[in-house]
Image (cartoon, rainbow, N blue to C red; front, side, top):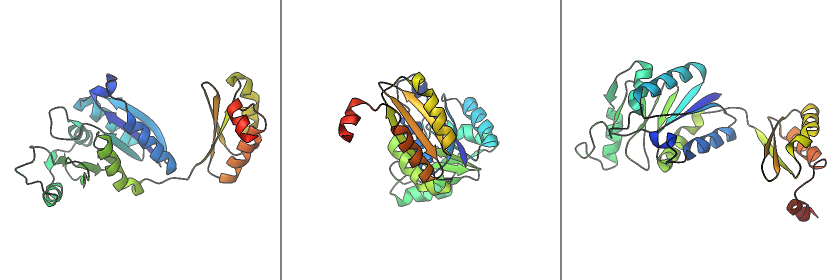
Length: 235
């Protein structure tokens, strides 16, 4: 299964808010063996949301959209998703009924709180108020991290893929000096190899079978210079 993640918010593009939602979702998908093919941030504009969602829903198995959910003037994500699908927004009776069960009378709710694309399934907000929606492989979640995480966990089982096994090797060498060994480990074992330089180089080995990944990591650890702190711990 492959998915695209779309985060909505002017504050993300302005650097005023760190996009923790995208990172969290990608980590959850990776655990489930689901491939994230795109992570895109768009402003609070209906046209931009509609264009990106419409493009991605044709290319990927699912599109997960976070942010801009609610009844305030800049919460336009539901409008954008509805426009992408060519559907109107409608007051969702099941969402309203659930909110009433949670103690919110209809008169207490801001107008538009439960407006979802026509035909959508409401996703209940266990730690907030405004519901999310699922429709035609598009999942619309709130932007508040605690609300987004709780809502995603309610639909997480709908995302599946091949389990991915992962090992990490740290090398205290320049990345350029490791190229031959990275090529060798890739050729010897059924694994993908990524290298990420910093103070040391993190080498990430991944594969669908646990044993080749473990053997590849063991082979590589014997052939790279470990940081001094790790060498001390191993001795």
